[in-house]
Image 1 (cartoon, rainbow, N blue to C red):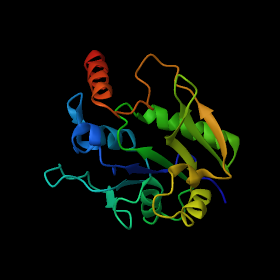
Image 2: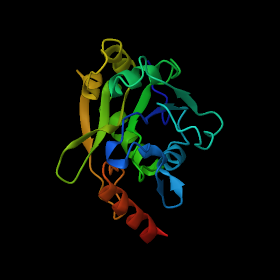
Image 3: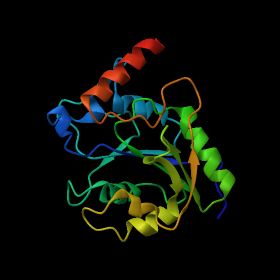
Image 4: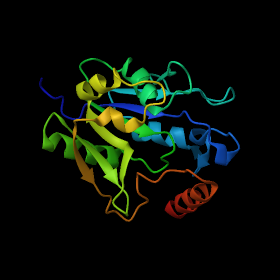
Length: 204
């Protein structure tokens, strides 16, 4: 298979209970004047296909034209099944797929390009993901060979952890050395959200 240079799909996972935010969808939290989902979709604007997996609030703004939304089956059965649902609408000829948690306010086009370069440079059967400052792999901030993830996703059961999607795939780790906030930073807690908003205000 010939790899399409620069071509990738992006799957953004917005499921989850967000108990620390009283059930509010983390992807709809506002950072720097836009929701986290809006920021992420803008970062992935260059993707061949953008897919949002999960339920959005009834009063959420419409998704941009061309962005697809699907739901895992059954609903609420975890990120691996959500990726499985997202892959079902990714074009068959898309060689790479970014798999992203839906709470990454500082994801950027530059960060996705870094992942693409690292993965492509390592070969068509390799993936790339960001590591945080402590060296922990951020499994939901990476880019992967679509066919291998499809094969793994076909085997996942409800409740399976996301990491099973990447079994047998060579992983290249990427660190963010820029002064700007890291793309892997996720808003898991209200304190994280406060930090993100502070950083976003400083960038203006």
